[in-house]
Length: 261
Ligand code: ADP
Ligand code: MG
Image (cartoon, rainbow, N blue to C red; front, side, top):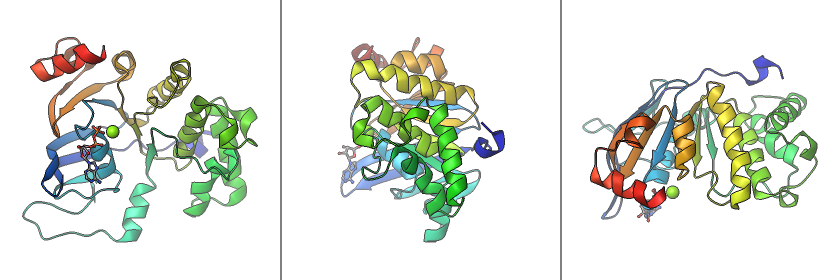
């Protein structure tokens, strides 16, 4: 593996007073979060608490009504309370999105492309690499997630765990400064969870900035620099796992942990 092909500067993500609503339904109610370069942040919270929406705001898939998000100090999204509306150009949005990896619960691989082409597609589509270089990078990344022998297979021929490892390789192909994971193991049969967590663990130790929504508390304890507990669109508490998981200060956090542990 050539380090030049894979290394990226880890990004800083800042979320400032983000509010998001759909009609009368308030989904995020003033979220502030700073993710420092190389940090692993695990987000916990009940279903419907706004975890996916928060990741979607960071990846430009949703715009906040109030507040803003920045990547390495560059504004993402549009609104700052009191400011006039700042719209980013479509081009700026695509440029920022190409520096953010996103791994979904349901893998979302392209079914009609081979595993190798799934991984190589984005760097070619965004003009970052020519096809031969993209294929070379894709082979390296498949090796990194332990799937070098599946390059020619189609997604349907793989297990869920293998598909999710391909999705992680695909996210890495854009050499993102940060990777967002939205419940990456919750669609998997229990015996396939470990292989995906072990790939994520490998990324965590390699210094990539990671933000992971998961209910895997043991995994959170092992890899998180910071655990953030969200309820009702608000951060209830955050801190190192030894505090939030072992000595939660808030009743709602204790209640949630008692249900998932
Ligand atoms: P979580 O990921 O924590 O389960 P979500 O961020 O997916 O929560 O959703 C938070 C709330 O926002 C839920 O009540 C959900 O129904 C609502 N919601 C999410 N996306 C939309 C949307 N596009 N339109 C309307 N409501 C939505
Ligand atoms: Mg969700």
